[in-house]
Image (cartoon, rainbow, N blue to C red; front, side):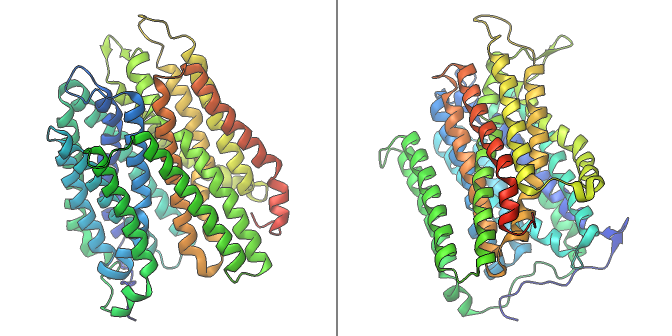
Length: 492
């Protein structure tokens, strides 16, 4: 049928799983190596004043961090459309990987223009690659069921292995040798992912092949083209402002973008609820998705401070000497993925073991938010022990903080996309997935804006404020979990 990508899954298996899973496992491992390796040193490079960094204030650096990480999620929307309707998922992954690698190598060149160009290239490339790798993983298991869940669990391990190794390699090279060498190492990682992908494509069968030509595809999906154009305009305006062509402060732009995303999301939900042609039951489920969208945005606005405020805390205020060797502060960025690798299987077993007593989706969101807040209470307490001119606090404060954040993530993140597929009306599933990405983008943006207050607010107050907001939000989710279940007939 015109417009459809290849859907025939390969039959070759290894250990009961399609052999193509290993191709996507290593592709995503190296892509996440590059992403998290670069992210681990991004704000440290921007604020560095002694070793060739940009010597920015934490406020400016935080806004850049937030805009960058938010844009990665926003561009996933047109990236998925380009793959589905124009070039196919297979080509989108390869082209996206090349663009990502070019972006990292651009960051490896000294100068502001190559730096901002590199960020934009990584955003565009990730938008093409990230959603389409996951889509092909799902296509490997057309029968669905437990085998598909197990396949995604293996794939998730690849993501976290890459996220664990990336900060260790890129962090060491960036902080101990040269910032640009660290950025370049991230590009090499992405190239290794492309090699793995190119070699293993033969094991993917017909999955993700380009759609057949159909002129009506473009005409019938003009709204998706407009969304992509809007995002490109945002990127162009950002670059123009950074180069002084059109003057505005980055913080003003970041706040304005955040309010715009909130307004668009609210208007979209209002449109679907009032004019979307839904019956009463579907309207109730969409209303629940709206509340989950808010919870997700709040969670990621705290969690993603790992790369901003908490990263600066590790570099400036933490004693990272271990066994007489001072390790790079960016290595602490590997703590979260390490905890994920350790505890994700335990949580998978736990939800199955609980069976009919398994917490509902709103209760899991409540756990996630409250545990995130507890983590910030820990680091707020640790911040009170910081002394001027002292050796820095123990890294245990950050490790314990990341432990609570990771457990919170395991409660909230895996059920997020699953809940969308369960609750969204059939004709709005794809669009609701896009809304979920917008929630993640909003959270990442505000994580950068909040993290930018590192130098302007007392740290105990900053972290305590974040803890208060997310804990209160978690308590509200817990209080209203039963009314939400009742609202849609107890199906969450």
